[in-house]
Image 1: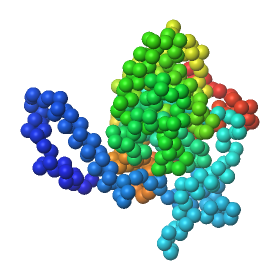
Image 2: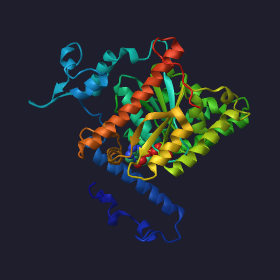
Image 3: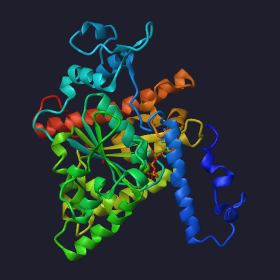
Length: 418
Ligand SMILES: Nc1ncnc2c1ncn2[C@@H]1O[C@H](COP(=O)(O)OP(=O)(O)OP(=O)(O)O)[C@@H](O)[C@H]1O
Ligand SMILES: [Mg+2]
């Protein structure tokens, strides 16, 4: 990455430098120093983003090759030119390859994959992405799943319930300066509104809408229990689920990214979900903390107050081996523990730890935002194949859920893995 923006060079750091010498902080560090740090960090994110997303500081979706369109549609490349009634892309420069916009891709996938689209009258399927352990890949998984399903023709709503707002940032939206309270799930949690409709925002990625998050979403953790104290009949775990009723019919899939904690917000996400995806890196510590996750999750169902919890059931529960580090000698053993413990809940695809994801994350994007990978073609292909395999597996579960719920032919019976 280039040198830091000018305003962050030494002459502009202000009096904090005297409090934070290069060898670490020496006291007293006062709250106003912390506030200065907060301002600088927000300013740095904004400056970096502006430089990365030139010319207008907005993300843009990538263009797609004819090969990619064909592969998303499951047809041979040569069939693209035969379908004259479908968009034929654009030749940007004489002699260059034909490219397709995201909206053109969606016209193709909706036409070619009709049997996988949501049947009329069937509700969208809500998927919560969760694991109380931090940094396991929840947000990356939420984003690639949304992008991957959208490329395959589905209309997706993404809800960021994490006050860290990483998912919001991946959409190129700055939580601190660009997200107002009424754009988040905050008013729903406070009881100011009864539906999520007004919070929904369009994004740079056509076919994905977003309910963004911002740091003040932390207040939801107080407003939900506070409301229940005042109104004991309030089902505080069911607020998101009910709020979704107003938007459920407008989307094929609703994806909820959750915070790394057992919070009122994550409880709401799990209770609103029809299916759950748990990203889990095969490392001993992540395996151990996942055991606590299931314990706490099961308590949700057992809790005397959570009446709905006892009757809650899911269409699917997938464990996704994420950030799999093939160079780590412990990986094969922990992968076996995971398979032995979670059986057929474990998806048959796994996501490798890859520089394609980590380098794109530096630019606030995912593998699917990448227009051109500068590194080895094999590394890129492996990453794309892994994420594509994951998206297809979840899509299969979604389609099966529609089949079961809406009496639509072709679905597999619900499989239980526990
Ligand atoms: N397959 C991967 N290969 C390499 N890096 C990855 C991969 N998946 C995610 N990462 C990186 O790991 C970090 C954590 O990922 P992510 O933010 O998705 O996790 P998270 O579970 O949402 O974290 P949190 O609990 O803080 O919300 C990010 O920097 C992300 O870019
Ligand atoms: Mg996250």
